[in-house]
Length: 85
Image (cartoon, rainbow, N blue to C red; front, top):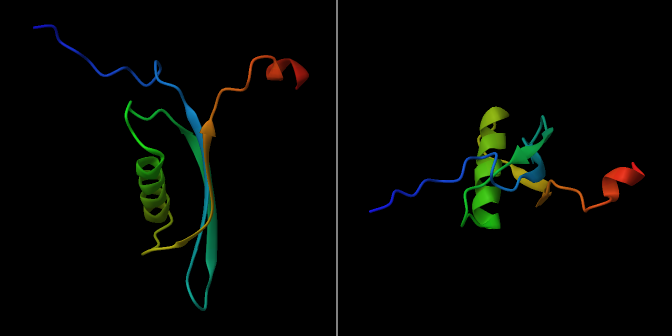
């Protein structure tokens, strides 16, 4: 039986993400995080949001937070866009 392997992250499309969260009542704090991610095939936008939200909240040492902004878009620019930069 042939072995199947997961595509390496370098073989998968990369997605650029930005998330801004806020938390606190008296001392309100806000953090914006950004990066790129190469999700495994079959992952949903909701699964990626949950992963990135949990990661950002954990890194900010917040118990929970409200999301002010979230974006997840393909990281690659459309063909030709690089030439206009």
